Amino acid sequence: MAIKDERQDDPSLRRTLSAWRADVDLPQDFQRSVWDRIRRRDERRAGRWLRLREAVSWLGADLRLAAAAPALAVALGFLLGARQDRPGSIDTERGFQTAYVDSLDPYALASRHMEAP
Image 1 (spheres, rainbow, N blue to C red):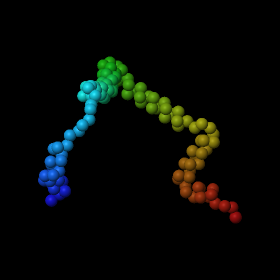
Image 2 (image 1 turned 60 degrees about the vertical axis):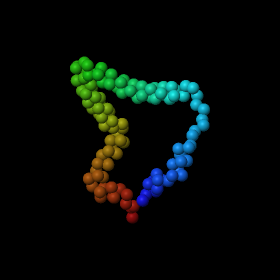
Image 3 (image 1 turned 30 degrees about the horizontal axis):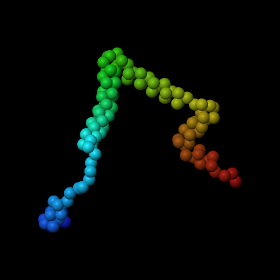
Image 4 (image 1 turned 120 degrees about the vertical axis):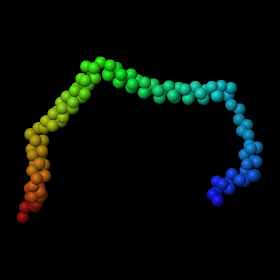
């Protein structure tokens, strides 16, 4: 038998819980303020999705804009990739070349780090 089952069958616990009363004075507008907070929270949550849905529907309303958005995103990706790919200086380009050779020939990397006799 689990502890939970034992507590449910305890008559003294049941009497104590049924006799217990909270003597707390609540403000007159407590219930209304609770429901107002719940309503405002729900409106904020719904408002975020509503704004997103309106933006998507506005973008999708014009077929030309809907077709152009992915094309613009791909073009922007290519431009940013080309900008990142361009070496900043001769030293950077040599560094890339050295790293490439090192990745192909592990002996080249080892030979640079060996001490001269």
